[in-house]
Image 1 (cartoon, rainbow, N blue to C red):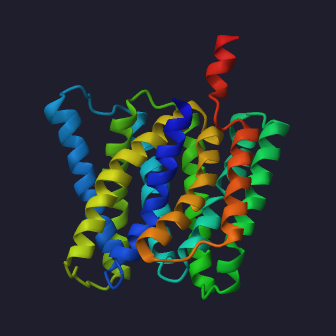
Image 2: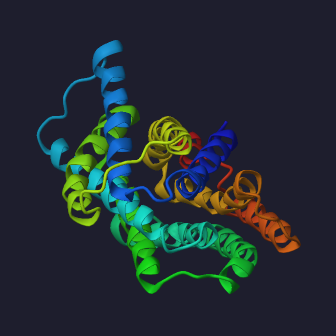
Image 3: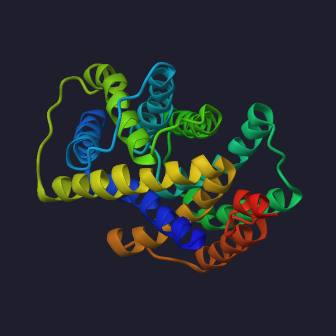
Length: 293
């Protein structure tokens, strides 16, 4: 079950950048991201507080904790990522995404006192080599700008901080409610940036935009984020290691959706990524195993 959880999450997470490139070209990025947050947050609020009626409002310090999660995991991560994707190819963006386990491993050791095993370091390093092999052709042809690279770096660091903070905060709320509130609070932080940086540009609806927005709201903001929070609450390093597989899915999706070719380097690199996941133990639930011993 853990393997299936990781595979589904990786596939859906990878689809976010492909959908953005395919569906949102020429659209004001932060404005359309605000719409995504608003609709996804409203749907999840309606589900928990309207249909199921199983949720209580956050209390006390939980508000501040949710605000930090919303700022790091939604506003800064996705806001910077979507701005960066205008100037950085999807493959290069995915390569930066793969640095998450390294950042989470370091932050977890410093902040949570979690020991990163040699097996985990070896698996992450092997997968990183595979990703470099996959991304090398894209890097050679890259037209990325310095500002785009800086935005992607901000996005990756922000999400790593958010992942470790969520584990440290130990919020006693269901994952779905955490996701709902971080989207709503993240929207509040995002709106001033959208107003300032998008220059008041309005959306220009078309079939591509509508279908891409629907996918981003349901499959990424709702489903993928719910899976991510569930995995992060177990172990942030275990969760982030599955991000190593996201670039592989990105290349496959780009080939199917955008018609980009897949070369032999993609196949070799993908094999190394899968091997790294197995060696690192990402296909196992480490904390569950320790509890059973």
